[in-house]
Length: 410
Image (cartoon, rainbow, N blue to C red; front, side):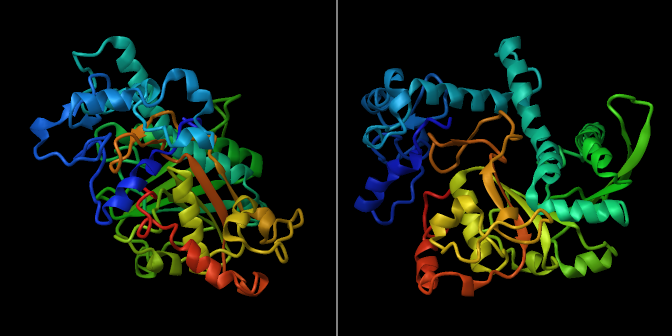
């Protein structure tokens, strides 16, 4: 997937020709020429993946021939991007995986798929679910911005409190409300966090999931950590609590929740205009380490830009500093104690993302993997005095890299 071109570039000529272009290529418009379908009945579907639509056989042929398997190695080069129109054999195979996964998700034992394909789809679906506890546990364990908190908790209360903000029943909580769902999700988080508790000398790790799509009935459970080497040895406890509703100060006070040591946002979409994160972010104490995941690199960049413009992050991850064109002054690495600074922030590919491939709802040839990118740092006030004198104008220009202003940011 990393070698495939970004298919968002394919809409640019259509947007230039039609400024009010709002069609979704491959869904309600031909994937090749952009012609709108007068009726779904007139659309021609790709016979391989059954997910991409064309207005005619000639357009289907033209699109499928745009990239051959022989030049995939060069697809990242600039000269290949213009011709990378998209529905190659590789793309078709990936979208066919999307189709299999959705069929198996809706029907555990579909009769029109062989056993090998069904099992492969189940494995991909499971890997995506396991990505949430694996990412949470491993990134917190290794991320530079969390080390001072972990050391402090190990030497004082021996209790780590983590709030997962914007959690939902069908993502972080694995369909918890369904029969048997609780056993799977609780075991997964317990196993994932056992090593963190053991290695850092923590007696309790408390996960609080808060979101409007959490289960209607608040869940409050306790699970014992066990050693992989000696399953009979019990050395600590995982506490899991769910709260249905928006994350804000009133809800936290209402349920008497302790302030979080770390906050997690799985695919929050900070820049999506339909949502507002101001109230949630305002209720988090300054200086709290955070972890955010996104499905695409562009979304991660947009989320980082949003947090910077809201003065919610004190430093910019080194890999993104050049994008915002901030001067290096004041962005030095921190000491080993993990005090806030550039050295504690990070932005990178997530090695713990799953293998399930999903299809964008905007462009039929766009694909992504959930939790593919991770952004971490410390929620604090960004010191604008350390930036270049013309940073403000550059930040305004960079504001175009938002989902609201740039349709390519899906």
